[in-house]
Length: 300
Image (cartoon, rainbow, N blue to C red; front, side, top):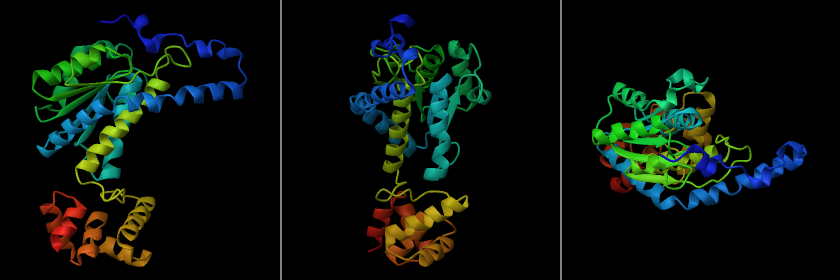
């Protein structure tokens, strides 16, 4: 296992050596300049991110789940991405899961020592009934967190697909994963504070994994989140605007379509574009694996 001090995420950044004597404006501009390099670092890992998305899409097709696992900031980022999937993509709460070392309470307050226990990760995954159909995505900026490594080991032991996301090259995490995603973000503005550039990089990767997976799963039409759950006034308005934009109808007609589709924007869009009722629209969508474009084309 690599020594912590040898990791690039733990190195002192020479560009911020005088951080405590900078003006606020200079400090913020320096942070912004460092952050500007994160996207290009993520871009270098797109081939591996693509491989991970392929694994997740395949898992979903056989009824498997996307399960993020991590400790501290990494764990919180996984939980954050998981909890956004139901309202954005209409997924069930158990389709994308976020597990953080130390349990849900660790999201708000650090649970010291939890990240050092690989057996705890195995227990947490066993508690949700991990199967060979699932994908475990372990997040660890250092690439050496025992909890994250324990999660991958347990996943592999039962045949689940495994992905490691780290912010150091030659990460130990990658050695335990089917796909190792390594984002080299380099030394932090504040030495060792991986909630900064490393955290941003991990968030970007999570965004890519879930969004690309859901696009490939028929949750999107064009660039519209057509499986959005209209659970509040803002989301009802958004669903109506999505329907109007996708079909060219006015706001009133969009609202009526949404109501007739029992609040499901995707069904409403197929109703309008295919000229069918809600029941037929649902049948078309079922036959098209949820893809709007395929459902509409199939109606002709």
